[in-house]
Length: 215
Image (cartoon, rainbow, N blue to C red; front, side, top):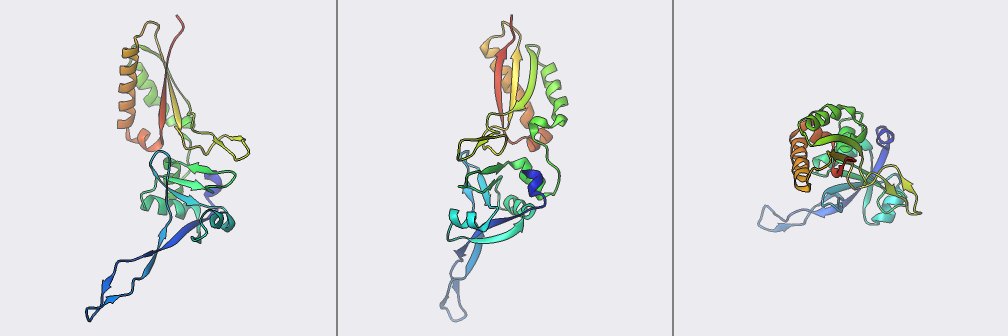
């Protein structure tokens, strides 16, 4: 989807927003002027998202009072970033809705290539370094998170576009590691990942899975 949007046009909804009253030259309150404002929505996790549509019909079906503005998707992503939105939701309310996550939105706004975090090998050295520093760990692997996939209205499962966790980190511990020790290790790794700027910018969200190696 990100690659398709790189050169595509989308329609973003705007609505009239009344400006503040202004005092005229002779002390009379002047009529309010209408400004045009982007429509934003709130994702289930509380983040702000910019809706974008692949057709005028879909936009008007979703918000009949909104005015469709045609822009290149990269410009829409830039507007989203400027307005503090971290997500772009393509065709909300349609049979297929696709969520473009924060790293992908930033890359689109900058007109750069984007690789999903679970396929991005640039994160592997950091993960290996963290695993090497934890004696109780025998494995730390990255995989797509449970929230990567999305579901169409007819029940089909799609391989992307979901709003949930993007990256799943599977931590495998030596036999006999206590639950408290495993949890402490997971907390240290999570804190180290959050402190790494490149990782924090390149990964939208993570989930940790803790397991014990066979005895």
